[in-house]
Length: 154
Image 1 (cartoon, rainbow, N blue to C red):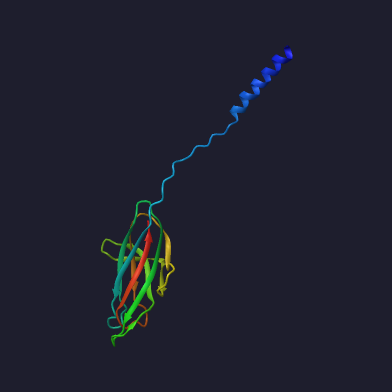
Image 2: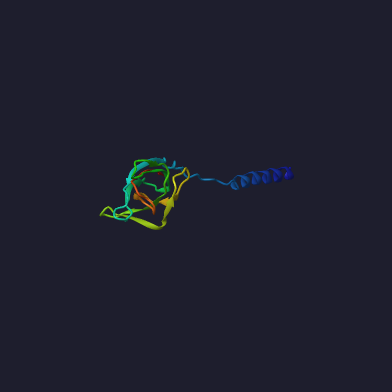
């Protein structure tokens, strides 16, 4: 009988200690990512004035959580002095921040001479706020260039 009591006692200790070794995993609630917004910014870069290349700026706002932003020059068509259209011309595309005076300050590594295409020309992660895209003429431009830029951001 004594062995029987000892066996029950050992079985009880084994069951009690097994329950103590259970690990508990706590889960943090998941926050759904902010929806991406696709903005199409359009405009015209004027023809050079007395040999000085012109530019224009467009602004967009990144949402509360910030995140990945891509900028793509999707089209750029130049109207030549004779009225004909050159359907694909390169433009300078720069990304930056807007000053209180409305000037676009382009980041040191945020400018590219871009030919219109499907892939992103600029990309990076930005905090929430208002940003700008500066589009500028490049050497060889003789007429106004109508452009379209796609910006994808949170």
